[in-house]
Length: 77
Image (cartoon, rainbow, N blue to C red; front, top):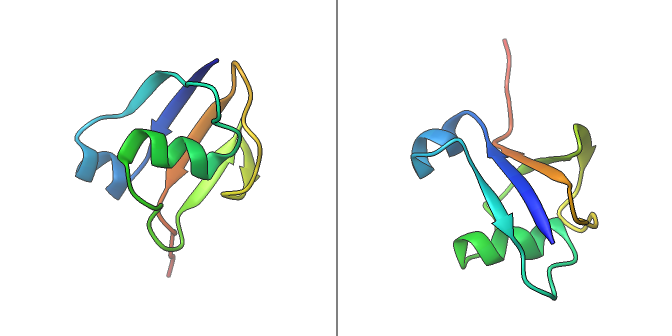
């Protein structure tokens, strides 16, 4: 299963990269599984996610060919 991962805003800066092309192993079923596979830790609090450009949650499923975007909460003023 291949998934395209993109990071935005502070996450991009903190990780030092825009994204990853991931050949995810068996057992990656959700966005949270994918994050843990990539970073070996729990997702940060209030992490926002989109799957195929639609708002998603950490328990949203992922599938071959998906694009998953991670970004921190956004505030405005």
